[in-house]
Image 1 (tube, rainbow, N blue to C red):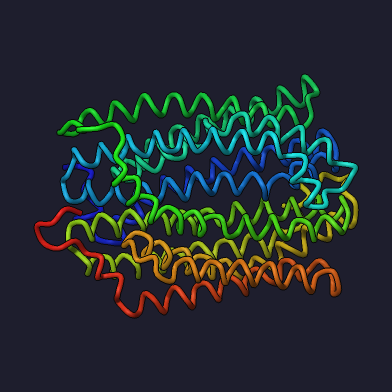
Image 2: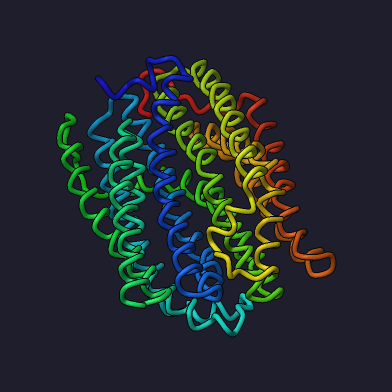
Amino acid sequence: MEDDYLLRRRPLYALAVFALPIILGNFFQQTYTLADSAIVGRFVSQQALAAVGACYALTNIFICVAIGGGIGASVVVSRHFGAGEYERMKRAVLTALWAFLALSLALGCFGFLAGRQIMILLNTPADILDMTVEYLGIYFLGLPFLFMYNVLSSMFNALGKSRIPLYFLIFSSLFNILLDFILVTRFGMGVAGVAWATLIAQGISAILSSFVFLGQLRRLPGRPSAFFDRRELGAMTRIALPSILQQSTVSIGMLLVQSVVNGFGSEALAGFSAAMRIESLCIVPMTSIGNALSSYTAQNLGARQPERVVQGYRAANGMVIGCAAVICLILESFHGPIIRLFLGQDGTATALATGQDCIAFMGWFFCLIGFKMAVDGLLRGSGDMALFTVANLVNLFIRVFVAVVFAPRLGIALVWYAVPMGWLANWIISFSRYRTGRWKNHIPPSGAKA
């Protein structure tokens, strides 16, 4: 079968071919969040940039729930696919789609009703509070589209078809940016314009993705005996919950840290928001490599090939080092012009200094999150979640503790000084688990169901 290259080709080649469309797709996904910030920062106001940035940590938690849950579901689907159990695989896919639709509707209603109170609890500056609430209200209306698109992307990846989500992301990103310009610069809709642009673009992509995916599913042999299976949902949940926590660690930490940054005022928040957009873009290749390694690990363990998993892990670390070197070179050379892209020439000195200092420091440390994502991806793909949650909680605790305790006393720089500390601790714990080799115990017995 043409989609089994993760099981047959050289590990470095297989991972690179599989991960590249995911990386490109995630870059395009980040492109329209970058465009949202840059357009409101340059064409509306610095306060509008701060408002969109203030929403980012909260909205990213919901994105991480969608992505992390989709990854958990894809691990189960990948195992069935690797074992050639197509009927069971289709049953798992349908179970995931129904579960995510219900979850997205529940979370969307909660966020829509509680958005203002959440932003008040986060100490959002008064001069941008109304704009943040307006943005969030529209965002939560589109949450079902966001969830369905992300889970479908994970399902495509589980089948080895990582190029298809890329095509939809390219379309969605370019369409979103076009709508941003029209709604913000032509119709003067401000932060509401970028929120509506995102909702419309993601909605169209989700609908088109569902039609294409169902068509791909019909080409595989077997028919599902049920459209919902509690056992499959349970298997997905056991992997998805730690995966959601892992995916959400950065965002949960940023949400708690956001209240600290908010205390420095909207000018510092604007600069920090711009820096966080850049950080999110730099993390894309690292996250994508880890996610690719999850599917690679799941398929190869399903096919009883643990030696290929070890080879793939080494290849993934080599890819991380290459990406980190490029990111460091770019950020250290151009951190000033990059921040000005968001703030324009009218950005205040405080905003510019905050953004530049943050990304100039962070540029040296993206290899740490790459190593963390790689080993976490292997453990997640094998279903070995014993220390997975602990490692990510330690990461979260360090970031929040240092920021909350020391930043108000020693300055806002402590907010980003804490980030590589958390990444390093996370990697040490997860790598120690990998070295025990216990993840190999999750290989399904010969002749057993995956």
